[in-house]
Image 1 (cartoon, rainbow, N blue to C red):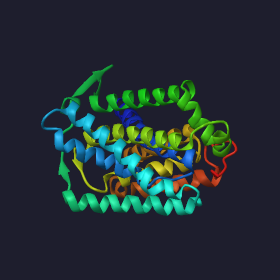
Image 2 (image 1 turned 60 degrees about the vertical axis):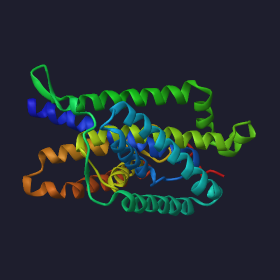
Image 3 (image 1 turned 90 degrees about the horizontal axis):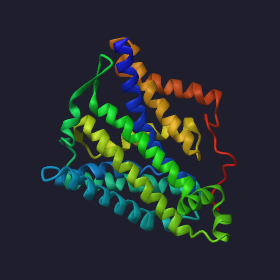
Amino acid sequence: MIYVIQNVVDGISVGSLYALTALGIGLIFGVMRLINVAHGELITAMGYTMLLFVTQSIVLAMVFGMLAVILLALVTERVAFRPLRNSDPATLLVASFAVSFFLQKFLALVVGSRAKGIDVLPVLGHQVVILGVRLQLLKMVTIVVVAAMVALLTWFLKRTRYGLEMRAAAENFRMAQLLGVRGNRVIALAFALSSVLAGVVAVLFISQSGFLTPRMGLQLVVIAFVGTVIGGLGSLVGAAAGGFFVGAVTVFLQAVLPPDLRQSREAFVYLIVILVLLLRPQGLFPAAGLKERV
């Protein structure tokens, strides 16, 4: 029973990280119909910015890291995506790959491609005992932080003016503009919110892994994107549920597969993904009336 509880907590923790990453991707897709592969580089940029200040103050490192990723997100939106806003989704996708690869190579040129160690929140490495079960404090904090971020995002989208404008733009961008919604502001806000989610994911993920690489964020985004497709493109609820599903399945397979098959865990994960999409090609929670932004 203790082993089962520990694996359940692990699954929820990993699934929460993927869900938060998928929400960042889903925010941009909802407004722009853009699958932003470069979202992973925001996670990476947060990590390397924190590396510059973590020896001075972890709070300072987080503040400067968050400012850096917000600025990077706004710059990429303004320089790379705004000129292509009226292009078809395929062109936007190619542009996002181009931005992602450019940032990866630039970062590798500046800091090198070798992994770098970083200790962000060492105090969370301890274990706590809950009902006789030893659980890592970091995993419990990850679950609580992600739940709080999802709750705040839900409140923002449903209770604030800017959130309602984002939802209106996601439903029908042209109609929202005709009703007075400023398209540039809504899209910039979506990129800023997405970068904040990326920053939180970076802190939690790096706290667990303890290292940085220029391709770190891309690995997270690929898995989160798979979760977004499973949940249903254009649906934030689907993005969160799909990301959580992929993370939970990954931990479950790690626990039940024989030791000699665990290295092929991802193959089994994607096999399950294929089976889910064969049964529900539109995703588990498809967005109602999904349309291309015009």
